[in-house]
Length: 201
Image 1: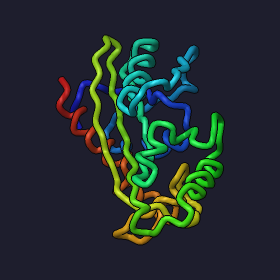
Image 2: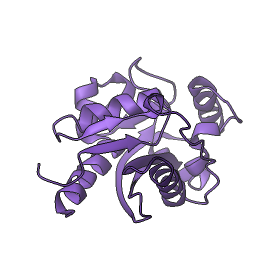
Image 3: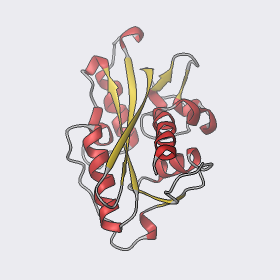
Image 4: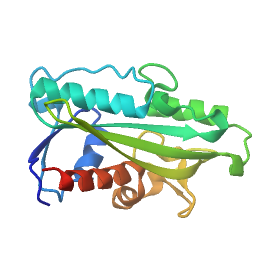
């Protein structure tokens, strides 16, 4: 892949996201840096009203603070029965500092008794790329699915144990990481990011 960006800062401290992003982008030839490599890495409050706003804010603040191109991912689970919740509040659905397990428990409690065909949901991922000069580009990926009645599988993170891919009959947490990284919302957004990076000059 031939593009002028040789290094990208990942504007997140979430080790699970960092691992997935590095796995999916490993063939690009771009060096991916994370927070631990910098002093004064900015803490960015996610107070936007959409995934797009949050991703753009994180990427732009990190890019301008460090003087390097940065990417930020903001992802959310949208459950139709809940009117699109938890959405932008996915990471803190059960409260600030909630664990993955607590968020999943709350979700399953709210969907108790809802029939399988009404448990439709999707994962959405928006990735923002920001330049140190303030330019911002965004790409998106999504994956349609259903919410299981109970957690299944021990891989992945977040809502992976309760998110079923209908064509496979498995949750994200039951899939091998290589398989998940072909079909997930984040994988699709990162494929779009690769296309974007290839067009930059």
